[in-house]
Length: 288
Image (cartoon, rainbow, N blue to C red; front, side, top):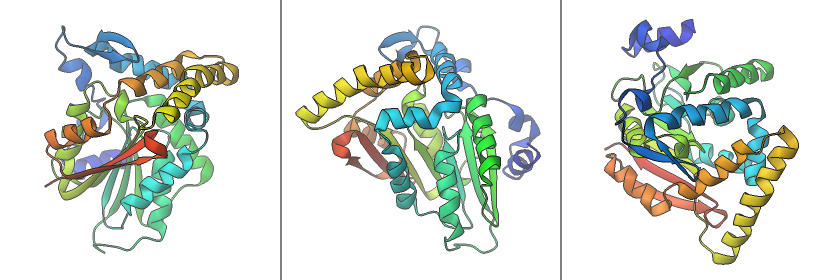
């Protein structure tokens, strides 16, 4: 915690800000505004709490959850995300919705062999998540696995993706893997990511998306709605979190719609590509 406070002080946010949980979803909600929670329609200011409850239940089994959702392929997909990012030393990288550290630990491994862009600049990797249980699981794993990289500062920050505790133009790269569909306001979160990026900084999003081909889509639907919740019930004793996650994928914008939202958020050079016929899509954009 002291490390996080020192970092946030250097970034100009102060101790008080470092202790806040940035819940813009609650503070700035229109009481009449609604959003989706899976297939349900809920008040916008309720979604963050509902999502928090889901991830609090599965925090210790998050890898197993992703294995169910992807048939184990999420590990290869995350390798692809970090390879696409190409982390370099002397930069600051924020991994949004990264509580358990799955992507962050890959970034640290890449940094061990990475070149430096600025030998006098610090190398910082920040795991940012709104959920305290997910962050606690990430810290536990970091200690258990002895995760580190020489000259790299790793910090865990509890914060809302819709109201990040970092100054404008203070970050070189922002990643988010399988987390954007869980925020209440996608466009607000994208604007926040763009705000904290330095000019030329990169945003990379990996998310379950919309399958392109009819037969594959039909098979994927059967797997998603029948197999995944049943496996969740069998392994964890609770099918509800897995049902929500499947439903949340279907309600999330498709590849082209998300690219449009990124442009609305102010990003440029926006592009996207599919993995496994659109089961997953990667979106890339830069701050002008």
